[in-house]
Length: 123
Image (cartoon, helix red, strand yellow):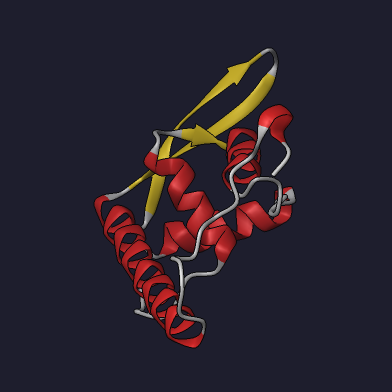
């Protein structure tokens, strides 16, 4: 894989597979959960991402099975896929760190804080 940035759906699929082998529907649900609902992959989009990742050697076929009459094809992360995901995480962390430093210089004062939910889940 190139050193260019990953698109969010690709990163989320690799992240989901870092948790273990999974089939298509589970990947759709997990990417939605990981993105806190921002990314809702359609089946066609998911399989386009998986086909590309298979071609790049970042994921591999992890078997098939039939559950309740439905065919499930499983995928798993390869070592190259784990390395690519790790590179992307480092890239994003470096960008976020640079942004935090610039924001702090732009508006000196208390450290930037992420709002935490209060009682009842309200932030």
